[in-house]
Length: 321
Image (cartoon, helix red, strand yellow):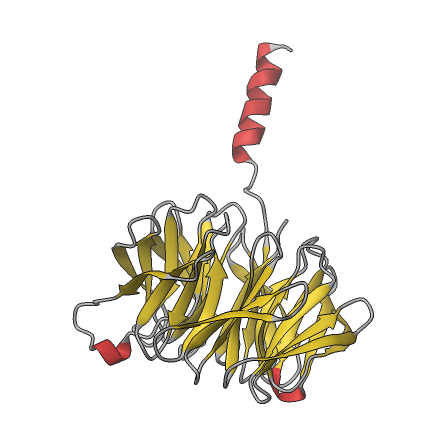
């Protein structure tokens, strides 16, 4: 290759944009979904959804978007390429949050009103099991190997371990008040559970079900009551956890190995849930009271932008490719 052509190729590669992902935000009060381009960090589309859209996730292949329409008692399925509503799945009453297996054919849904977890065959739109859990179930997590399902019950204050193949209860772990969210570490060794009213995040050994650590937070100038952890995201290398602190309007940056809080990042008002881009360049936060999304530069641990979305944004998910 001639030197001039090689130099031109290098310049083109250097100027090429980073991978672009779509970011999806559910807005509880405006009953719609905001679609964001991760390259331009701007809103590219707003799509009508069912009543009180909350939990949101993208299928493993990136082709489908699932949204809990809580007040419509259904899970809506959108085609990500067109954002056309394809169908509505059975879900049980008041679906809050959910998890999807790696094959993309089983959906595990928390039903707040009936105190149970509903398992739905996505392809057949058929309920195949209902599992009784504690009062006001919300958080849902599936272990990386697909063997264990975890639900958190807000009023019973427990993390319920369920066999994901037989749908039989395995164990119950008592955590602090009002557990809202659960997530497994990438290697499946630990489960992180946020307790909103308790003001803590419990790190649980996924095998023994023993609590290894309760992480607490101390934000200068704020009372303990204002610090209410909800959403949690973990980096792929298992080194960092990002925790949304609700009305504290901060995201806590935690060393996921020592469990020490490294930093607090000021975002919008009443931060609910979080989502990392697959390249872990950005973290997006849904800020429920300021009706906006904040963008965190992950390598720099710095908030770089906030912009408006719909009314009362709660859930956020990013396309896998």
